[in-house]
Length: 233
Image (cartoon, rainbow, N blue to C red; front, side, top):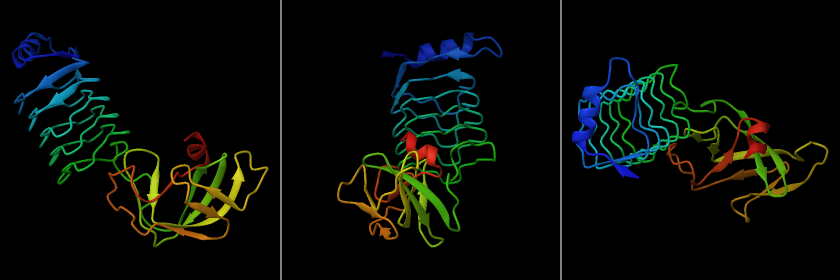
């Protein structure tokens, strides 16, 4: 991956025409102070940011799709209408960021500081994918292509990050069927934990449920909101 220096970046920004979208994809940015800089309308796809400070920068309309920004300081960055699909932002300080209209599908926000972050109804994949209250139905794919239908009760703790997958701490097994619904079964085994079994009519519970919604691959009963999502997993 080619590394770009701050001087080269500043030159490119100075030379671009009004309204022009810059392509700065697949570049490495290292040990830069880019606070309060105008980085709007730029394609930063598949980039790597290491020890970069972006506090107060304007990245509205830009794309950090599938880029790595782990540990960078993003305090107060304007990500309005930005494409943040698949961006890794583990441990980033994102306090006060504006993500209105941004797409955060599959973005990694583990241990990020999200205090005061600003979103709106057009922000995609930042709010919970599953209803936060009330009983709901969920589905999960198990060994040998068995599809389990779950009742997640109103008092169950549940979370979701930036993907369609959700987690809860307890559920009742309603049905176990083949994908085409022609066969029914009494039990099914988890694809992840071979010792975790779902039995028709019984309750399952995870005692050490992790309530941090941004930790996606962690303890809990993983489920999807639709049969189609579960089968496609």
